[in-house]
Length: 516
Ligand code: FRU
Image (cartoon, rainbow, N blue to C red; front, side, top):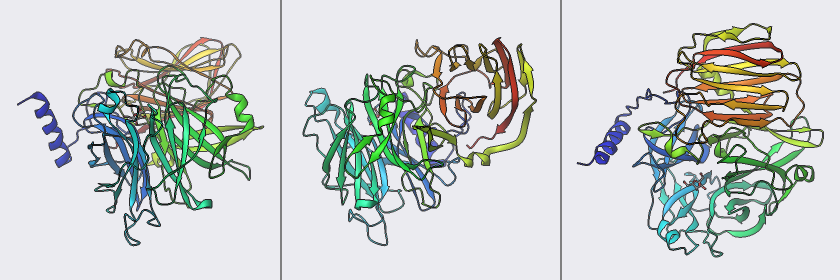
């Protein structure tokens, strides 16, 4: 009996009896990760009948990328997840790459009935053999449907629904939404370094509408996992459309990254806002997250109108080292769910993020207040956060020329440092002493986030889990997500003042509970 056979069957046993331990070293305690094996992009996030669905790129037979399936989990509260059996498996047309799921409320596809509304998955079929022989048509778009709340899926007999007639080497990751004004479905698709927009009335027959993006944004890598959605502009009677686009390589701190664009969509084509265009000239990207570990993120479909939030989730890793990180039976986790909102500062649009209010469910009563003070030297702010699971909310001020960091550390002096350099007006994350850093030569590199907006104080909202930190700065104006692999929980928080003077205006650390 091969080791692999044994391992697979142990995992199946775990699945069958719901015996996940989720106590392994480096296992995040309140972020989604698969029970075992390899995971990358989140797919098909959709809300239906009281459940938030999360599908994901999954290779169930190993801890490195392989023939892609769709894994599946559901949650009623965005925090606690129930693992479900595999949703989609590879077939004669190839692996099941990234895509989206919509609820076909009017049964436009005919896959359901009026009583039994179908859920439709629209995904890329990727044919590895055709890719190998260089035919150029190895990526096509296909459908599957479910009429039992996503529990079982049937692939459409006439797949693919979009063939790759132009033989585009990269032609994938369909994101579909219902465009109410014209009563039709719209698909955005990544086609190498641009976006293709298609429309359909029944999800089966698609018409090419337009191409976008030839001269915009960072273009040094392949564009992947697009998303396009409207957002109201906070404080204005105005709505704009946001395009999200992942790129790999070419991210702001190396490897994978996610850009965003703001403009208008008329049902046929996306047009960049003119003020936004000037910000992204000459191959410059506008980044949703400056950390190294937020990729392939898209938003939930079908969030009820009365809720109205635009909820976002990304793969919390990077193609540079995702397959080499030091975890044993599984690889990688998702970010926390974040709510996106659109703001306008003078004539510039800015996409912001915040942690969702559902996080409150796992906040415990254990809160350490951080007293206001002015500091010119290093000091311990909080100790005894023994689980290493907490939310740190802190507001600070500092003199010009100051450099300082918040050090999240353990007794072995392993640390994640989140800092501000007033000389260069950059936030940064330093994980060079965070424990296991050898998975890739760039893993220990500093991550920089240039601050492009006016700010008086510095406000950080930080989630610390067993193997990740997510920083949301200045009321959502900037994000940095970064994974780490320490040998013990980061149970203390210290202030490290390099030069200058730091004033802590207010702060607190709230202990969070495991969801597993
Ligand atoms: C992004 C990506 C997608 C593709 C999938 C394959 O991380 O490369 O473009 O569909 O992963 O697993």
